[in-house]
Length: 108
Image (cartoon, rainbow, N blue to C red; front, top):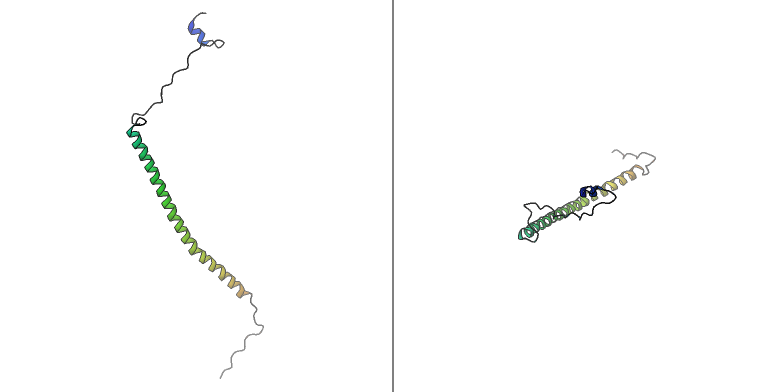
């Protein structure tokens, strides 16, 4: 039982193997090396794209807000007018009426 391979499998006395050496992660062939001009150009292009998308989103938000404010002004006035007409209709319905019908004007 002095087999060296057998000692590695023994759970009571495991062999002291050094930690495996991990190489750096796999790099895609089209990925430029860090710090190179290609990497910096790629990073700059990504940052520019992100900036342009943010600017477009902000412009869309500004236009949408302007449109919503205009709609609120337009429909806010119509809502107010509808409420006033409703109040006027109710007041006309419940106003006191004369008990006797009006006397017709005399005929010549």
